[in-house]
Image (tube, rainbow, N blue to C red; front, side, top):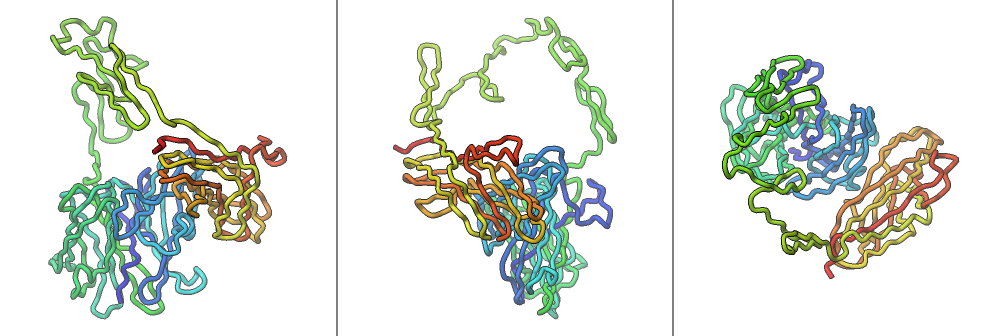
Amino acid sequence: MRNNWRSVFTVVISVLIAISPSNAHASFLADNLYIPAVGRGPGAAGSNWYTTVWFHNPGADEAMVTVSLLLRGQPNPTPDTQIFAVPAHSSVTFEDAIIDLFGLDAASGAFRVQSTGSIAVGSRIFNQPGNTISESQGQFMAGMPARFSIVPGQIIEVPGILDPADETFRSNFGMVETSGSSAQIAVTLLDGSGMELASKSYTLGPYAAFQRPLSNLAPDASIDGGILRFEVTGAAGAVLAYASAVANGVQSQDPTTLEMTLDPMTLGAISAIEAGPGLAGGGNEGVVVLQVVAGEGIMVDASGVSIADEGIKADHIAPGELVLGAKVGSEVLTDIVTFQAGNNINVDVVDDAVEVTAFGCFGERQEMPVTQALVASSSGDWIAGNDRLDIPGAGRWRLGYRVLVEVYNNGISTVSDPVNIALYDLSDQVLLRKTLSVLGLQVDLGTRVYATVSGESVVEVDRATTIALAARTSRNETVVTVHPHDFDLSGNLPNPDATSFFYIECLHRDD
């Protein structure tokens, strides 16, 4: 009677971040976070698990959020991703996140959440054995910043492990790799007094999500109030760990969060800031100000720090120390500088000049305006538009679109559900998921909401193909319309014309 499906993860940090006991399930602000366990599908004892995720942007600017699905039991160097916007001071919720974001009926793993601004992410993982959510049992999981991960040589512990002999509870434990490198982890089971009962080593690939029942670590152990210890022992990876205890009943699969504990010092807590050579100021609380001290050849004033007039003299430069450099981007290349050709780029030296030229089809772009309205009103079904654009041959292409979308609610209540827009490969009958965008809107009954939606990515194709725009809605009472290019909407929008089109741009042609 074991379940290797669901787990939960929270962190208690009482020194680095002031958290009262009533706020143990904290939501952390960051631009790179992980929900280490998400899933949708059946579990042990007839349980059925789902995941609801909400994204909150407390900032004054819109945040563009990228969610990556890290599938369990495998490395995920290039995971499937979805991108959507969270307006300022707003939240976007996906009630059934696995199917809403990635269109999958069953999957388990972790979410990586990257954002253009600091956001908070929370989730509820729940078992729903009946027909209504009021019959569900679930637990909260906060999005955890990647900086909380442990690295080689560091140890964390998870207390409260339950797997008693009477099988009233079962426990699971899991990890997710957060650095993009492999990691070796030693997992040790201790009883409440700290006595070691079992130990086992596991290996995680880059961005791998991992979960096992406690029996995988200690097949014969009976434990009530035990401790799991995680230590990164090899390779260069970084790891977040979690565990949960699940009621092992017929009527109840109620999960309990078992929290990962961290020493604030491992997160780089700063006790004081001291001024080093050439600086003045410092402190250990409040606003800490460091200032550059003026000196020979250096001028400091209200406009900043600069070299004083005649501040560099001949005796400041030793023989052979004057080096000329070439600035490329933000880097300055000195000594021997080599310019290397790449895809579609030639580099030639003519006399004392370097000539950099492009060749092939680089930059060639074709656009297709939306000439006929695209309407999607059937829940879960992708509808492809009538407009077509041909990718003429194999190679690397940038694909994208920018369309005006109208969302109409003809149901019986306010709806807040995702609208999906994507490009569709008509030749292979598949979605080009890397160009998919998700738009979260709240639409009152009988009203229409308009928004501009865009998506872009680079893809590689092995032959000529044809693409079209496609749309999908998650509720039958929601009607999504992509309006044609230059369609007159002067009665609804300040700008009277829609600007709906999709395009291809050649980066490299194989022929």
